[in-house]
Image 1 (tube, rainbow, N blue to C red):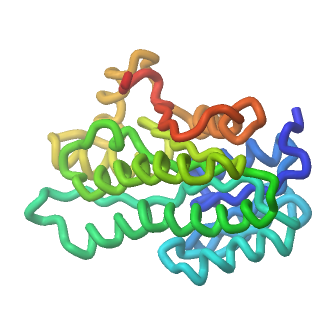
Image 2 (spheres, rainbow, N blue to C red):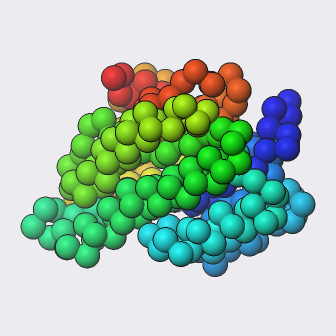
Length: 259
């Protein structure tokens, strides 16, 4: 299938984990992809996707408006337009409330919520000017449904993504732009390796991988998710088949949260 032939996709946090799985899926279906990250390996990750004619890697701090503008300018200069924008960059820390620093709170909200807003703002500007509609897909979290212990800042940031998604969906609907969010659950990523280690120490005497495995037992499918599981949902929401779906937040978690 090449349902994204001649379409350009911007993916933040696209050099690893869920973001890289999304990039692989879009490229496999004919898209041109621009992946963005603050990590040094973003250009190498893009090269693995097929070279400059299919993918570009851009250093971008999504909390910096000027860098976000430069990201979308590069996408348009390289590939002519922006059709799909996936706001996936995110960070997490885990701490007891009395130990959670103001800096951690500010950084988490800045990346996870403000960063989504800045990218959506610039993507909408480009899509409206192009006049051909578009797709915005925002990465929230299961914690946008059900906040968890020791991560109030992360939960707040992801609840914010869900509210932002609904508000923007109403504003840009008549422009042919849909705005949806996804809530990944327990997915095999570097972030979940961190979660397993830190929550494991704070919640009990868990060894590496043991807490994650215990939590997986609460999933009806009895397995952690893969990046490809998330990519399937995102590709659908980005496709023409999802043209009448907007303002929605959809779980992709094996049935862990059913709401």
